[in-house]
Length: 296
Image (cartoon, rainbow, N blue to C red):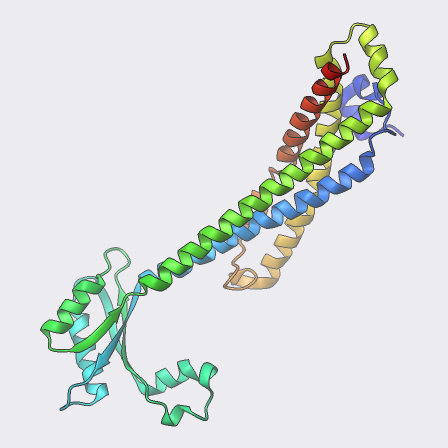
């Protein structure tokens, strides 16, 4: 039965027999590598999206720890701090955190047994204007002018950690993509060398009949580019199906809020066959030309 690559490339693809290059195994390797590269790319996008969402949320909030004076309770001091901060430019809302709410937040970490006897700080949560948020300096100054002894935490430390983690994850994903691309290129180089070694007689016949090195190399680059495109399409299709399934099953948050996958991530994988074909074309042509010129 005629292969689909033969129909695409015409009679030239039929010049080279297909039993010397281990093409079925090569296609399987490229498909797996493309599948892994697609997952790495989606993981990088999801991690970057989550990190930016967390950083934005941290940037829009601040926490104030209030220390009451001798003549007032902690709740009174927190209420006075909230009232002061509500009037600061760049603050949308300031709310004193009561003990019941604080206990709800701490219960998953410390349990119910110790909560009644645990001394809790008096906190004020501040929601900042996302367009022009108030700085920690301006919040601290307003509290000091109002005579409130408090410490402002604008979450800059946590935000920096989140952003650094996102950058590291992105770098690792890029490295994983480059490694898979390099692995695909190495597989193409090996397959081209094996194919040319097995087809030495045909190559010599083509050369004697006037075929140039570029023409012969073109046979290999076309064959392996089409093979890589088909294998890349298979790997990308598997990755797209997996990502679509995760997005469908995960609901609005994708897989989890920590790894938000969107429908656009599925479409982002569509250029994978073209990238695989490009890597294969370049690797096969360079290998074929080097072998042809080195054989003289």
